[in-house]
Image 1 (cartoon, rainbow, N blue to C red):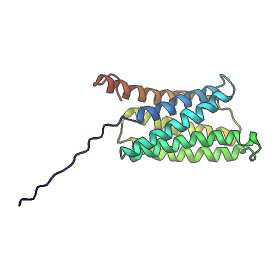
Image 2 (cartoon, one colour):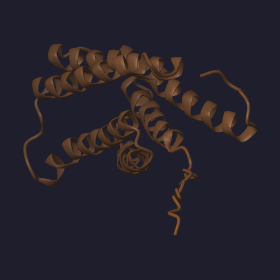
Image 3 (cartoon, rainbow, N blue to C red):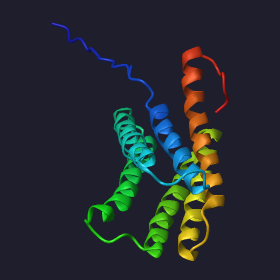
Image 4 (spheres, rainbow, N blue to C red):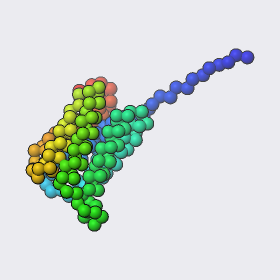
Amino acid sequence: MTEQNSTLTITDTTANPAPLGLLGFGMTTILLNLHNAGFYPLDTMILGMGICIGGLAQVIAGCMEWKKKNTFGTTAFTLYGFFWLSLVALLVLPKLGLGEASSPVAMGWYLSVWGLFTACMFVGTLKLSRALQVVFLSLTVLFFMLAYADFTGGSKTLAGYEGIFCGLSAFYAAIAQILNEVYNRKVLPL
């Protein structure tokens, strides 16, 4: 009797979750920073986007990246998704009488820690695409600009414009990935 070896090859046929996560981040970042730049007040549109698109869509994308064994994508999308959820919580909980509003100094430290995390993640993008390098570098700058404004009581207008750029860079990276995949060629450079 001869022994036969058989192997089972499983091909990953799941979709690329990165555009979902990048759009969740990018669209919400654009809208929040239009507020920071002074175009309109903070309202439920931004909070709703923060919960649903910036928060939940990114967490879902992070879970999908986990299935693809992408540690960078899992960490980035899941944590930034929870960033949006925590930011909304920081704004809404005091209004519901469930705690004191964070002081500007506390918010400065909150944003500084996110800036530090983002700077570390930027280092990871040096092995990835130029588009992701732009997203993470501009996000690092944004977090530190916002933290500085909170620490000093300064205006967030300039940070708002930088944040619009950051959000647009994520939006671009997502659309480039989608179009490149749909057309099966490089339509937009990454």
